[in-house]
Length: 352
Image 1 (spheres, rainbow, N blue to C red):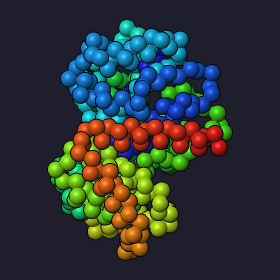
Image 2 (cartoon, rainbow, N blue to C red; image 1 turned 90 degrees about the vertical axis):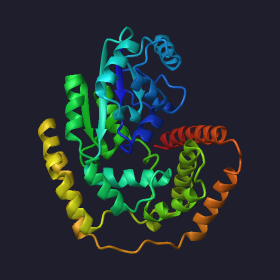
Image 3 (cartoon, one colour; image 1 turned 180 degrees about the vertical axis):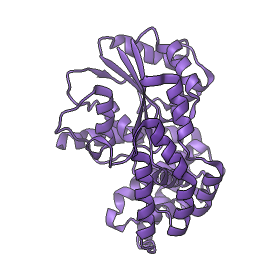
Image 4 (tube, helix red, strand yellow; image 1 turned 135 degrees about the vertical axis):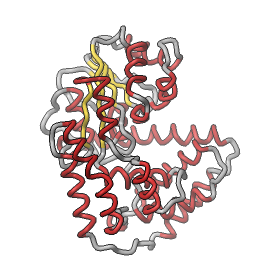
């Protein structure tokens, strides 16, 4: 059995990949794939891997039992986008200690998002879960100063540890197989997929400019509440808002022309170095495309005409938040969201 470890990163289509895996909607290629997960993903393993867990850890034992039960599978997959935040040597050591006796080979799949998209999606995510009060320009200033979205050194560290078993995939429709991260992941995992195989639309799409404005109002009422609850309610708002508001009425969150020039200059050398490491020109091309798009974009006011709909969603979620056990409530909302995503994904796949 081969073990494929998908490590994200965050906001690179991980939820779509995990939903497809949990739903069991794997392309038929002659290979059997096992997903040893009783939830949507393996993010709960992140603190164990960071601490260097052994095979005796309870959560590790559950995965090992599942892998042993399905020992005839060609491939097992572990998927946790938070693994990308752990030093690669810790991941390598923990994987070897916990699963080395069960598998013949371990490989890493790592999705990296081009700089502009990564920064904007990270901002929307942090606003959604109540982790930042900064404006987008302020957020970008901090990111530039910290070199937060520089990828070259991180990629090189992972490659130094895992060598050819480390597979970097660029999260851009311009280079993804079938312009789809799920199809791309299964191609990387299985080697090939049927030409006519497709997946439903993206799960967990980022909030638009209007959505980030409204979700701030929700999060302002949740100050002091358990972080997990703020996270869960932010995700619920995103789902309900994107479901209620037509795409045509959502303004894409973008970097303005002035800040785009500064952002480009701060990241162009990193893009060139990433391309040198990977042996191509995709990352620099993506940076140029996004930069030129920002320069040519006409700034337009956001559409706040959906105020009543957003206000109703916020009121409903705050009513849910009136329950006084934050931890239990957060877990219930999270589990219901995972179940809903898997169910909706299966229905969508049956219609494909």
